Length: 342
Image (cartoon, helix red, strand yellow):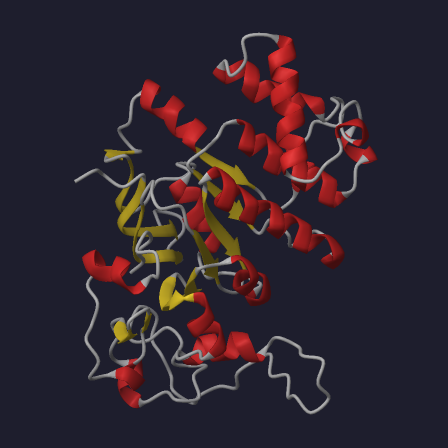
């Protein structure tokens, strides 16, 4: 059987600790996933600040190493991978960051971020061919060539700058794009355009998207599957429509309840009250102190992931009696069967 394109095996990342700093932060705990080359999928990873979303992205990109566990590309550990494999990895696994402006050098025109990957990876045999590739990529993300090339970053809007970065990723024809909060700094009127561009890359070019966000609304708009993280652990996962429309984990219900609706009779509950259950760091359910359904056992035991349906699972004792999911079986939860999380 062919190795997954990108895989995390029981990955934990801990920051802090050591001789002069005894405080530790568990940013991601025992997280597993598999992303196969086919079929291409769009999976959203959702959670509030501090849930481990960006840490996950940095681990998958090889920018940081896990405290325990393995991140692998085509069966090869990123920690021991050689130069030629890294070169292939950098082409096949691309990233779109939160703030597009930080990616640009203000002294260069935006053309520079497009010509650099073409030159670095030898994508074109001539300048004319490279120019044609750039124009095709820009048009694919809804940008007009004459309004984009030849300009400096400050002369473009935030939405235009972000779409240039989507076009840059497309030039390399990657197998997967990690999009880390790609629309959080974009005006609401332009978010649909960026999301549409990402969806088109998935649909027309066969690129899988791992969409990382704190915004449940955009996750629902673009995702097929969803993983809800809380304090570095998976709270709920499954097919996005089921999870968002009928959330099972109390934390997911909190996230859904925090979405403001144009209804004066709708109660907007952005924060959960204290449950009264006292928790000890590293023991029990991480959400117990905020959970309205918390029981005493939640402070003592960490709930496993219970499979609550064909395409969903929740880490909550409310569903005790349902079968539990082992990491190697997580892919069965998702509608496409391409990504697994534990």
